[in-house]
Length: 376
Ligand SMILES: *Cc1c(COP(=O)(O)O)cnc(C)c1O
Image (spheres, rainbow, N blue to C red):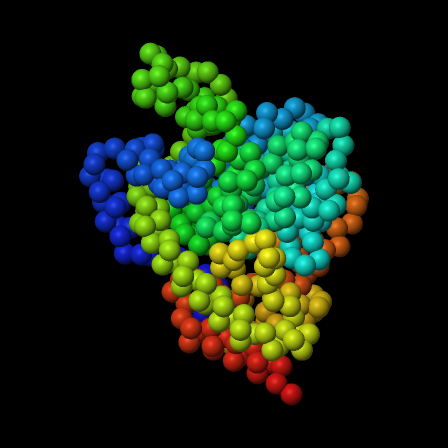
């Protein structure tokens, strides 16, 4: 069986975790945490970064930083992971779901204007499959209506929009290091990015349980105490040490993932030409970080039969999100608009195995198997 995903070990994880354990400081904000954060700030020019225990936590911190009042509205694509919506719902916001584009699952920026009301406060573009949303369009709408932009960059490490790193365009952003992402912090992990100076001081306070502990340890204040809301969002040094081993190898990981992705693309192109399914879309303004290789089928039945066939032939292919606007939890609160593109991706999209330790031979086996299904 070729699994859908398999977390990759670079080889140095246990070494750095051992170092963290024997350094005698296991709690968060130690040497490895600082090293990881500095790496992101230097490599991508992010103004301020903080490691978190998950991408969900980083999104929750973003939502807290937005300082929402009850009834404030947040525009979120319906085709995303629950955490994107949950983070803002927890802050009392009303979630207004946006549809996807025809060309790819990202939020359709052309429809944004029609969703804006006097209560709109935030837009949350999700860079699906690590492929950028049309950020110029999103930022223009946000600027016009004085809204905040929170990038859900959970899948978007090392990916760019017109040369700008994803996560570095909106006011703030969240990355995930869950084991299903390109790199992991040992199973669970995330990163908050703050690009707007106004949120730099507060993010550290929220991170440290509502205290100004970090400022105290830098010698900026002479006592520390409870100054704001907050929670325990910071991961232990053991997780940061694991992540450091992966960051050191990011370029190698990305090169390999891209090779596998390109190989799928080239070999599946003839079948896509026949109209059996469509291949992933990467607009000119976006780069491909090879987070995911997906196919979009003409209908639900063909997609479902395809997944079953691959499973019978030892390949773990899986569908992805169900539309959040029609979920059991939120459907009664949704305003009733239909979101046809989102529903289409929910019904027709399938993801193929893609992970560092997958081999070109395995990709060939998967494509050969698919070719057999459609041989005349
Ligand atoms: C993975 C993911 C998340 C959540 O990240 P966790 O680290 O699992 O909490 C949020 N949004 C998107 C789009 C994701 O893919």
